[in-house]
Length: 295
Length: 298
Image 1 (cartoon, rainbow over the protein chains, first blue to last red):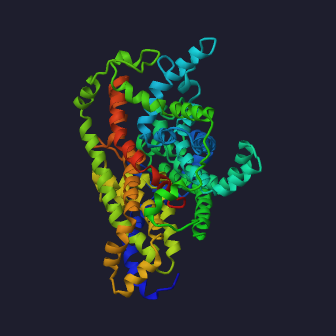
Image 2: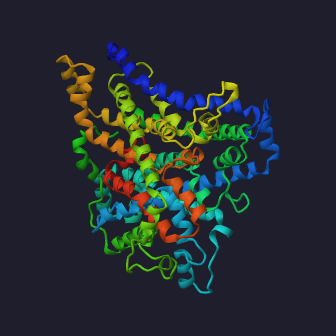
Image 3: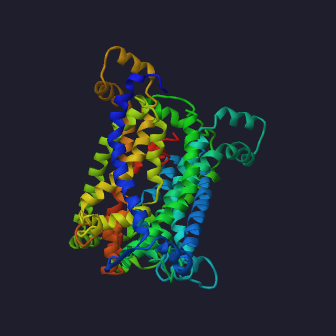
């Protein structure tokens, strides 16, 4: 690592511009977020701005009913979407990890949902898929199942609907990571197992799955940090509702800052989101560090 | 991770470990059905854009019909193109700045290591994992025309501007680009570099004439990933949007609030919004996983 001491000044000059840029654009605003979170400051009432210590946090935790709902929703959405997309991604990956006519096309079709702009995906799902009268999903249920039921997904099952759209978009992401994992299993091991006469299910359970452990962790952790940030399906499909049924913490930050102009509480929420993310980020960094160490 | 190979060997490497045994017809049929179901919403979006408004809500959804370009004409008439142009500008210019900053940085972190290179690498990626909700409030205040009176009230007046988004998209994609490029630079054989250094090649020559041609596919893949992320970005665009100019996702938001339920026109604008990225993604398929996993998975 220290093999060429003479390189160091050059290395530093190469790295510094990017480092300074990232610190300026991401770290400086975060310090301000902490500072603002300690103030009472609403843009509509600029005269009343004052330093209030931890009051914003106390208000959110003890008196704001939406806050608690948003914490629960955030956890439900992220855990639900990550686990289900890992499961669906695993199925996708196993399906295309076999040789059959048109495998390349199938893989291309499967990754496409991840490439679709989330805003466009949310609107397509809201209208063409989940609309109770004209949506394809409801039409299919009415036609295929007895009883002529036609659920109003966004009205009665808003959380499930949002999670479904998140899973549809993120399963391909999991598929790509797990597929890379499956393809790093040596073909000799598989051949040897087949010679020993294992069934395809045993091959999947005893060879593929154990090998995928680390790839699952990576997919799960990356999925978590990215899915936490998604507010497009929530805004475009449900606007956080009905009531607060689909309001997540990042969405609440938007509501506080942009619709109530409450800088202090919006900032306090932002700090809370970061604190809650730190556990996941720490695990993720440790995993990446381990994968990097193996190079 | 397992093997160090030249990028040129990428095609060979991708096939490694792929199950070569022919799957049963039942397996193939299942895979095709699953793929078609997963793809159906995209197909539906694409087809609906060419239907009439009444055709868009007729059931069962028609797969064969007489296509019309009326929706596209209507969407252009309500000024879709400026939004499209803004998205193009924001993604391309931010990606340009990302590469200008990331190539030297990744090169330094991979091949001209300073002390603490590992800490620096991890600092970069931790900034990408931090939720944007943690910085959006001060950004909103600083980007407004008034700014923060206690900080001297210098408002940057960047709300709803391309410059404002480009600054953020550059910061957002920089860590991913650095990690991804670093993983490609690591694959350059050390003896090639040592030989060049013995010949007295300087940093610039080494980087541009020796390393760059070897990692060109990696650089292209990184550019694709940065464009995809910037184009699809919603949180910043939405929070910092103002009455003036905005990107395509904001057009969607406005369309829904102002035009109401015109499914066919909405589908036409969605199709135009997604097609450049779907094309890029299809082209970059082989390298996609590397970008999405920060170069940890090859």
